[in-house]
Amino acid sequence: MIISSSSLLVVVLWGWHYVRYDIRRMKRDRFLPPVLYSEAGKDSQDQQHKWLLAHNLYYRSLHPDSQQVFLERTRIFMYYKKFEYQGLEPDPFIPLMISSAAIQLTFGLDDFRLDYFDRIYVFRTAYRMTLRQHYFQGHVSSKGIYLSWEHFMKGYQDYNDAHNVGIHEMAHALSFGFFSDPYTMPRQLRKRFNEYVENVRPIYRKMKDGEIALLDTYAGTNFNEFWAVSAESFFEKPMMMKLAEPELYQSMCKLLNQDPLEIMYSERPVHSISTKL
Ligand SMILES: [Zn+2]
Image 1: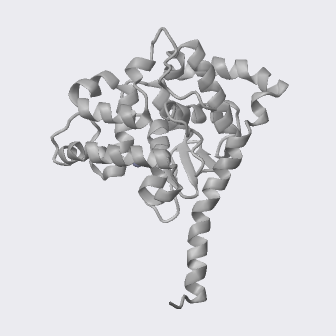
Image 2 (image 1 turned 45 degrees about the vertical axis):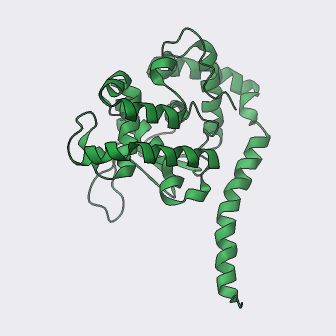
Image 3 (image 1 turned 90 degrees about the horizontal axis):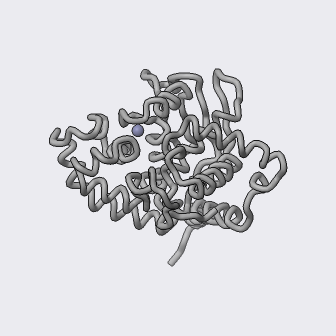
């Protein structure tokens, strides 16, 4: 069999594309970042704890032992991301809050750093992208995670309306590999997503047919939006979702390895969740 040099090059590049994510992941798995141990880091930790207590209801409702894991994960996540600001001044509160949305979503998973993404772009308010007519409150592309800070904060200020752009975009970021670049996703997580898709597909069909009132109609746009909108309801209206669509709720619990109704307001740290740093 003769393989041309150009097809060989394509195969090599294709392989390298996937291998580099594994290398990046392995490098990061070997060492905890110094941010967790430096004196300056310890000083800011108290402030970060106070900010999260005041502004992230999920964090506030955790047992103190779980809060400590949550905060450490948030600090690691921030350390590995570059935040770029458009129309607003950098402020340490912004990356902390945005990172906390990612950690909330992934709190039950070993993989919480969303390694596919290095950059998070933060806009003062809703923004337009080149060649697009409409305004975005957030979106995710291979270039990074994009958020309107104004809309992000609205999501956390009104925490029980099932609208939370931070959770929504982090859900897209978590599933980005699965929907567009599957082999960049850790194997375990890919397996969980496959099971989730299998389990909830009938519910998604019902949603498209207008038979489900629980979720925002935007969930009917496509399966990816169904997943992201479901994540918003899962955290902000867990009891309602559990009662109205128990199979969807259980599938979300299984995929994310956490049950918000069990984690929030638990008098003990929930040991079933991942504590890996
Ligand atoms: Zn979306």
